[in-house]
Image (cartoon, rainbow, N blue to C red; front, side, top):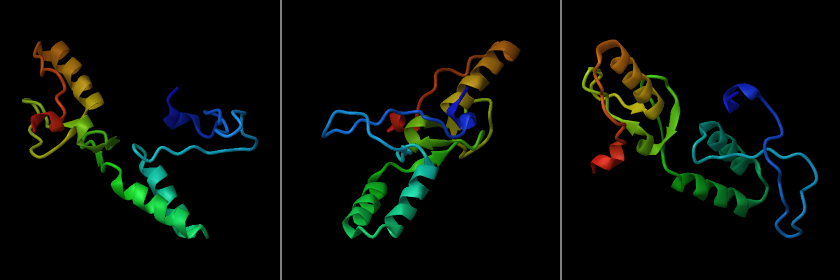
Length: 128
């Protein structure tokens, strides 16, 4: 079962770095590098906290994270362009960007249906 369907559950064990012991209480871990909802939550937190320096630090952190992008096929958020590629030779979506999962799906479909291999996934960043 993917994390997208599980809902709220105890996924991580939080260890206090100072004591080395498991931290008491309930926690919610965010991963803003790849999760747009985490970024939105952190922006809200930075605006709401009374700790001015913490708000500044969070805002700065978010501003230097790699931009998130979307796959034009499945609308999935991906981390920057390193996980996107241009459409393959049989897909005429000029200017579109495809994630690795959609690429691999199409690759299997074209191999099975037409005997054609669209090739390996090549991230946009590899072109530069």
